[in-house]
Amino acid sequence: MAASPASVGVGPRSCETAEQTREWMEAIAAFLGRHRPLLEAHVVNFFKDRLWETVDAEWMECLRGEPVERLLMLPSGSVQDHWPSSLQEFILTVRSLVLPREQKSPQSFLPDSRVASIGTVLAQGMNTKKKHEIETLSVMVDAVARSCGAKTVVDVGSGQGYLAQALSFEYQLPVVAIDASSHHASVTNTRAERIKKHYAAKCVEKQQFTVPRTVTCHVLSSDTLAAVTLDACQDDHGQHVTKTNNCTETSPQNGKPNHSVPQLVLAGLHACGDLSVNMLRVFASCEQVQALVSVGCCYNLLSEDCYADTDTCPGFPISKAAKSSKLVLGKSIRPGIIATLPCSVLYDML
Image 1: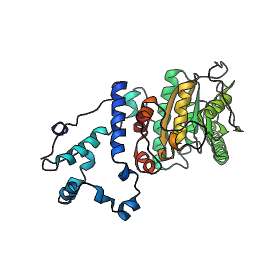
Image 2: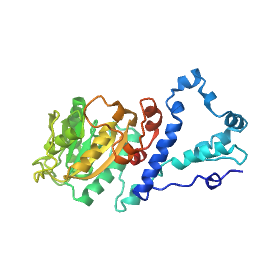
Image 3: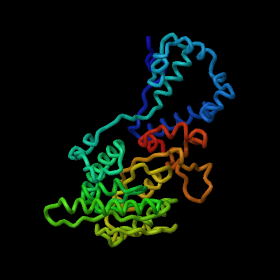
Image 4: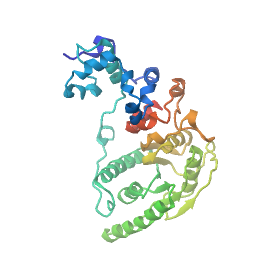
């Protein structure tokens, strides 16, 4: 018979208040701290150094006698009454520390939105997964932009411009596409012009189509991102042209209102490592940025305070609560743990 969390003193956690969230984060940090030797070990070291011998012998003896089907249920928090109480508590504690990751449809929080299938011309070069991501995120960005009155979308880490072009041609939103690769900017520009001709040809009434403005920039800090964003959008008000700029490290005047810059939405699909964190910082500090829609990735590439080699702010941790928890991930843990976390979980921990 399976045991319940209450029977071993492990209860559900909540993020309803700041205090409850902080307690949850501190519990995660304390738990990870107790098991760092196993967490920091590479798979090769686990076998080479026989690290399974560090696991409680009573646990090992118990689990060896269990069927595979029951072992596969361990990540779900399923335990048995005849297992050692310490093993039950360990499994249920792990389960209680997991942050929510239920999948929700865009309509659940944007009831007036409708995900529309993009055409074959706009979807050219996308695989099925990428097409689904672009269709879903573009309708969300459009709904958010219109709800907050934003006039321009800044696509950060735009790659080959898939999201930027969907927003431009399907939703008629002015877009600035920022990417570190000049090759990506060239591909984006060429692709956008080809798509523009297709849309112009099928349009009965004469309509002015605009293409995303491309900006080539290595975003090494939130200051750089804020500066290039405000510069690219200044006096623009939606009249975008095909243009590629190179930027250098500059400090924006975030504290001074700039009425020539329209209200913005920062958007990013697979914004890698610290790029997602820099987007969060710009959203918090720049008054022109009205909303942020971001799907991060490559969290294993986040810089950490204790490992930072530059003067720029590290990607982890960024909140006071996370810093107070004294949580240090380290270069060995990040690839194994953070790379498997959904972005919503990571941002809750930041």
